[in-house]
Length: 284
Image (tube, rainbow, N blue to C red; front, side, top):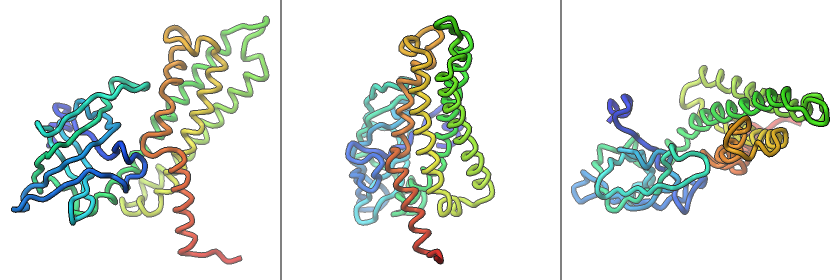
């Protein structure tokens, strides 16, 4: 499978979320049952909001195998796998899909890692997935700062440039400070990741990465609001100077949902800190 996916001849999608379980991964209902000879696993269930699912040839899927627990399976597209496109505000090119597995027969050799360890593998994968989302999301926020700065130096109102208005400079300052703070935290965590093993990242950085993603999406919300006010009506049109701001308005909220919603990640980060505190209580 790998040569085709790496070359781009084939595509693979991560299929975790379901209509019943988004950020609460433990509640997935997709089931797998081993055949009598043990050589195959028959998978039935549905996945939702699967990025790239419309085009995928393979699906890395979290499945609850009967009597064995949650496991990750690589499921190949077949007549027993149906995908339906989901229209989203952020991107038609994302190929977001509703995926139905209707008795899909999967060779047992397609189990990824150890049987019953799928939940932990999915959680570990989220760490790097969220880290990647932060980089992409904050770059878009930085683009908004750049666009707003350019516009504020050109646009005149009441005989002055926008940037000559103190209220506009304050908005730009808040936007720039937020972007730089996220960037700095991301650099710090990235450096730590380069010095740690995969297991150490999962142990020590899961909480900080969750907190970082929470901070990034909160900053993006502020950026979106300020950018819209600076551009005015142009922030609502899909052409001209405000087109990037308009697209950001439509799509930035995706960042606060994918890879774990804001509230759940913030809570997760604090619970991780509490765990560490309980293990090594501080002296007062």
